[in-house]
Structure formats: structure tokens, C-alpha cells
Image 1 (tube, helix red, strand yellow):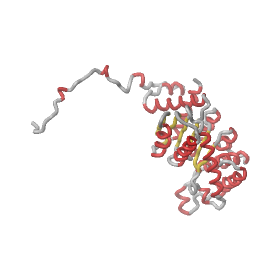
Image 2 (cartoon, rainbow, N blue to C red):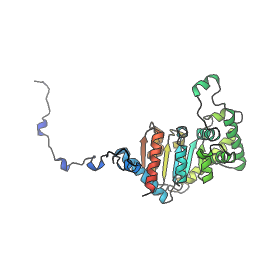
Image 3 (cartoon, one colour):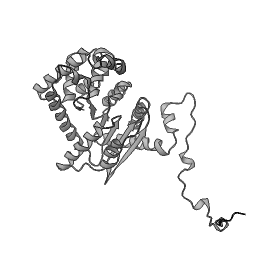
Image 4 (cartoon, rainbow, N blue to C red):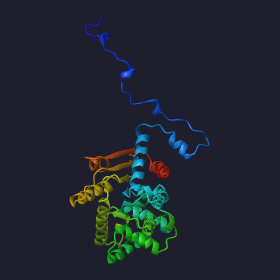
Length: 316
């Protein structure tokens, strides 16, 4: 027999499961679907719990926001373009769901290359070795040339590149986020960190021009954010630093100038969750009212799923 005393759990007080709150109920369970099931059947069969429940709640907020003419702002990293999601986002613009886009400087590079040349995303490792990384002439000349024109016209950076792609009659304009947004009057703002993009390496770069246009885009985004009061949604997809930081500052400016911007919804989609999206998108902006959501998964799966759910929700 052990020399150490043991607790007498025979004296423990028990109670009935009928009196206990349980977080999982039969109604929450998922349902199997047949091989010929529709997307709506599959969607309705998802378990009504945890992230599946959150995704449906986010979609309901997006649908409600657009029905009430509140903004739905999509902020995104350039990887979203590289994994083939531009046509899906363009469709959401066509449906009147996305009211503004915000991206980093790499976004305009990948969008331009796909639109003009049908290809993008070089082999960084091999090209870095011989100093040729980022030195493609056509990309730099087109974007930097457009920026020079944008300064004269006092445009934002997103509007500048979209306009240039339309006027150049880009071969693949139908899949250009910037070009299609320009044609549909959906504002695209581009938020650049000088030295972060390949076009900054090239002789045609004018840092002052980039700064002027990108700063104008910051103010355009802040103006769009003023509509985020008692409704509206901000989505951050794949931007770990730049867009969460820009959003927090733009939101501050909007509130400082008298727009409450409270009680709206935010969500972060990424493959790995990072500090800035969590605090600057999901938690801090929704303090005092509103709701923030976090979704972890690959963009090429999660965003088509989100888009399909929105389109089904708009039919209800």
C-alpha cells in the first residue's frame, strides 16, 4: 500500500446529463451527401459547429451588408493572384459583392504580367544567383511608365495601373483584377513598401511618384472605410503585415474625423495565422461591437468556397 494519501473520489457529487449544458447537439452533426448532390446540398450538409458555423455566419454578414448597401472590402496579398483566384474575385465584383480591393505592391506586378503576357512568378532562387531576379524589362517599363502618367493625372496607384491595362488593351484583360475593377468603378488601392517589389530595382523607378500615388490610395481606402458603421465587412486574405497595418491606420483616420465605424464584421483568411492580422483585423477593430472571424486554410480552396457560399446566400 502506498505511503502517500489518496483522495476519496467515492464521495464525489454527480448530476444528470439532462442538467448539463453540452456544446455538441444532434442538430449540429454533418450529413452525408450523394454522388450527384448539388453544391447547395453539400453546403447544407456541413456540420453546424466551429469553423463551418463561423463561415456561414460570415457569409450571412456579407450578404446582409450588401443588401443594406454597406461596404465589403477585400484586402489581399499577391499570393491570392498567383494561386489563380482573380476570376473568382472579378465575379464577386460583377455580382456587386466586393465594393473595394486593397493590395500590396506585388499585386500589381502579378496582375499586370498575367494580363499583358499570360504568365507570372519567376524562379527567384535561380535568378537571384546571377543577379537577374526582378530585372524583366517589360514589367518594369509598363508599370513605372504608368505611374509617371498617374502622377500627372493625380490618380491613385490602383486606378493608374487599371487604366493603363485597359488603354493598352491587355491581351488577358478579362482576368485582370485591376483592369476589371477600373471598368466596373470598383476602387483598388495599392499600398507599397519602397524596396519590396521587383520594379523598384529598375532604372525606370521613381520613388517619389510611387509614394505619391500609394499615399493617395491610403486616403481613398480611408474614405471607403467611413461606411463601416452598423454593418459592412472587411476581409483580409493572405496579407500578414502590410494590409493589417494599413487598415488599422485608415480606420483610425476615419474615426478621428468623426465617423464611428463600429459594429462591423472582419475576417482573416490565411494558411498560417499571424499576430498582425489577428489583432489589427480580427480583434482590435471590432472591440465595442462587431464580430471578427479567423479561418485557416489554403486560399485556392477557402476563397472559392467563400465565394460559392456568398452566391448561394444572395439567392435566399
